[in-house]
Each structure stands twice: as C-alpha cells, then as structure tokens.
Length: 201
Image (tube, rainbow, N blue to C red; front, side, top):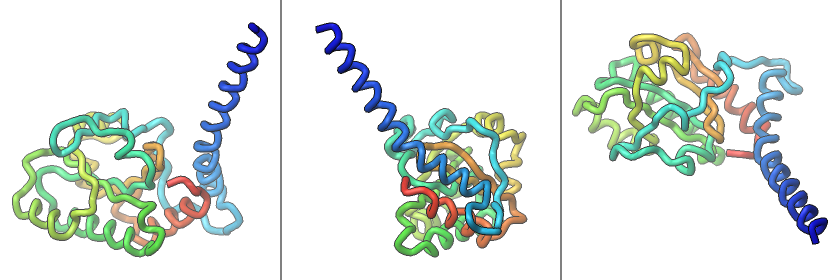
C-alpha cells in the first residue's frame, strides 16, 4: 500500500514538472533564439534587462486601486511605457508608435498588449480624454516610481524623460528595453523574433 502511495506521489510530481517545463521551455527557447540570432544573421536591437525583474513583484495597482491580478498581466507579450501626470509631445509620439506597432502585426496583434504605467494618479485632463478616444485598448496601471526605479536601475524621472519602452514576456519578466534612439523598426524586428520562437503568448 505504501509503495502504491509512493508511486502515485512520484507520478504527480513528474506530471507537475512536465507541466511547468511545457509552459516555460518555449519562452526559454525564444530567449535563446533571440540572443543567439537563431538561423538569422541579424542580432537583437533592444538591450537586455537584468535578470529577475518581474512585473507582479512591482506593486501594480488597477485604476480602481486594487492589486493587479496575475491572470490579467500574464498570457501576452507586452510593450510597457511610463508616464507622470502629463504626457508631452515625445510621450504622445511614443504611445502612438506603440499602438501602430501592435497594429502592424495584424493577425498576430492579439498576442501583444500595450501597457501604460502611471506614476501619478492626477492625469492631465486633456490627455485623459485622448486615452479614451485613441488609446482605449492600452492596459493601464498605477505604480510607485521608486519601486520601478530600483528594480530597473534608474533614478529620478529617467524612466519618463528618456521615453524608454520595455518588452515583457507572457509570464511577467521584463526582458528588453529601448531608449529614444531606437526606432519602431527595431522593436518590430525583435518582437517578430520572439513571437516566431515562442508559441506562448
């Protein structure tokens, strides 16, 4: 009887690890193909973020003030961007570009989510109106600027002033960043490689 219980426990443990590997392996393969260049001669355009930055560990709050849920954050590749109370010309250009990048993927676009992180809840009223009319499909969260600064290695208002866009994988890991010297083509090139290498998200 004890042997039977032991065998059942071993089987359950095996199935659990098999399930975990089935979920994680494709993303690991995506990273490997991405960083190694796969069969292409091109290399990544974005800069890798230090290992271990996880969105769900950064205190994201929904617009109604509740804690963000994993099932709302996980499951897609994300382009993530930050703003304070106002969104200047460069900020608006970046957000518009993010929207156009997602659209450019056509039938693959549902695999990509645009995420806007607000560091200030007092959003400029004019821009709040633009969000409703032009960027309603963005996922939006409130967060503490210092928490993100510490996690991502920035200080002060650098995250907003440098117009940095981040790529987040389907299990919430922040993996790539693009400063304002990078173009939409750079981001599109990298996302194409990631989508091709992974069937998750």
